[in-house]
Each structure stands twice: as C-alpha cells, then as structure tokens.
Image (cartoon, rainbow, N blue to C red; front, side, top):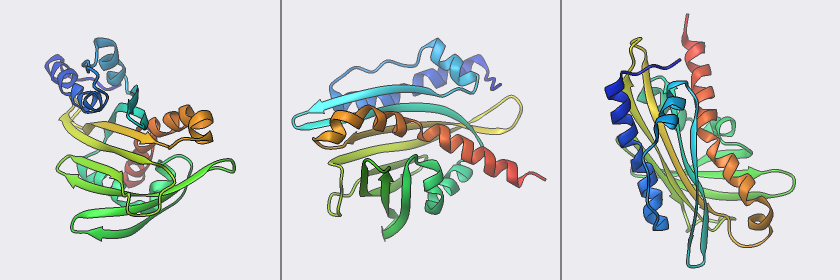
Length: 213
C-alpha cells in the first residue's frame, strides 16, 4: 500500500486539479480538485478516472483524465514512452506503432489501431517539456479520426519507504468523426483510451522487476 504524509496528500490533491482545468477550459466547464475519496484510492494504489465529453461547433470529443501512482523514476517512464516498439503492449488494440519522423525534439509516431470490425490509422506528434509529454494529431498526414490531443505528466515525490514513485496524470480528448464509429463505438473508445495509464503501470512494474537481481 502506498502511504504519503498528510501534507503531501494535501499538496497532491491541489495540484491534481490542473489536468481537469485544461480539459475544463476546452469544454467551458469548471474543474474540481480530487476529493478525499479519490486521493484515498490513489493511496491504495488504485487508478482514478474522470471521463469528459466536450462538444464545440462540429467537434465532438470524448476522453478524460486518469491519475495513477507509478513505481520508478521519470527516467524509467521516459524510457517506456520513447520505446515506440513497445507501444502495442501499452496502447490497447494497437496493431502497429512506428516512429516515422523527427523535427527538432518532436517525434512523429504512426499508429494503426482497431479490430476486425473497426480500425483507424493516424500520426501523433509528441513534444516533451520537462515532466510533460504533449501529443496531438498531425493533420498533415493521413488520418482516419478527426482530431486528438492530450498529455502525460509525471510528478515525482518521496515516499516513506524511500522507493522512487511518481504521480502519472494522463489527459486525452479524441474526435473520432461522424458516422457509425461515433454512434456505436464511442464509449468503447473512451474506455480503452482511459485504460492506458494502468497498462503503463503494469508494463513499468514488469520492467523494474526484470532489473532486480
């Protein structure tokens, strides 16, 4: 069980509102900080998910914000994010992920996702800024969805047992476009997207376990 001193919990609950504020600004909605129940869930090693739906003009986005506590350092998480070949293990329903371009420090990753019923291919542009990795759809390349954007943020903190840990905040909004995908699969798409941090947590834990003597 993860345990933090009470002052750290208060600071955590305050700073976690930032991701919701970002999504709330897009949707013209207010954001609320995590409550004691949600912080308690994080203490117990659980994942906290806040779904969001945003409509603006002809755009209709689904997604949300997910919070989870990871074992490891920022360098460990960076290595996982940079290992594009492993994305098919981290991103659900991903058939292929490949690095197709770099521009300065920005990286462009082409994704092919889906199943036998529905599939989509598109390219994400990723940019790292300190503890933040932002990503968004590259509209100049072929894309089967209308729009997507979001970020990962890793906030290291000290735990009483001395082991490195951090809070991963993951935010994503996707407009899959009009048609049958939106009508029949939108909620499935949301559920799958918001499961990414939990899958990253499992993958990172496996990597750390493999390094132990």
